[in-house]
Length: 135
Image (tube, rainbow, N blue to C red; front, side, top):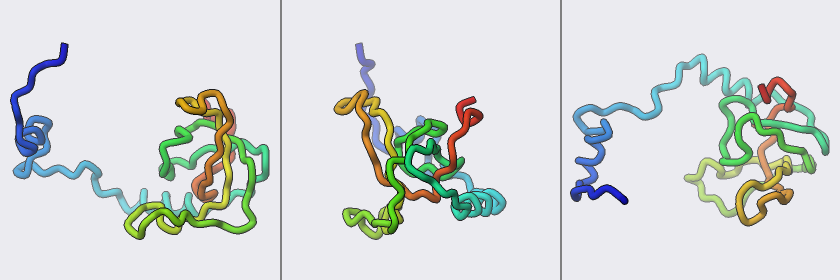
């Protein structure tokens, strides 16, 4: 049976979970410059992929819900030229993202559970998958 909650304002609710105006805490702490540079270097380190290669996200560069970190996915196609998603607005993190890699994975949610589904991604965010990624 669900618990009955008194009607709380958004400020009262935030205060109850420790996020009040008086005690402002950034949910995302400032990233040390070293980490920022490491992520940049990882993004710019390129790998040559070919169909049937298994790949996974580079650490710290995942920007989509699927695949999960360390989940191997198969390269279906490497596009000769990047395409750009035309549905995203300039304020989106995906705006003008160069999509040059088609990856396949087995869907684990309905609809499509158990079926091979494909997605377009930015290849700079991926690295070859190895057994040690699975450890």
